[in-house]
Amino acid sequence: MAEPQVAQKAPYIYKPEKDEKVAWCACGMSKSQPFCDGSHRGSEFRPIVLDVQAGKTCAFCGCKQTGNAPMCDGTHSML
Image (tube, rainbow, N blue to C red; front, side, top):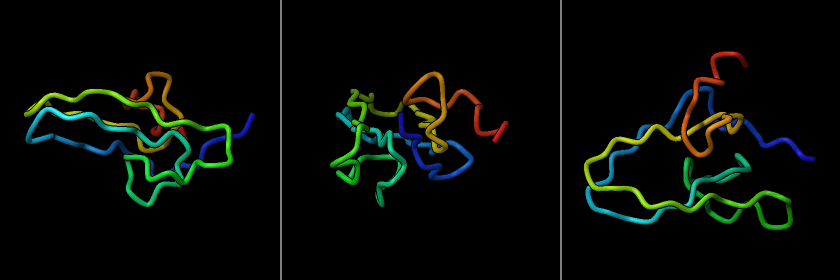
């Protein structure tokens, strides 16, 4: 099983202005972190698609090692 690339050793904080559907990058290769740009194509990785609510702050995992994907669980502090 391939390991995802660490995009950053901190969460990506995101607060949407409207309700929307987002695709979290699971591979770490996206240039649009924390969101998927299709860079995973040809790999075993797939984005996690979820609905986010307007005004609700989200802490998306940046290290891609979380046990609570796509949200940060603090794993980056052990890398």
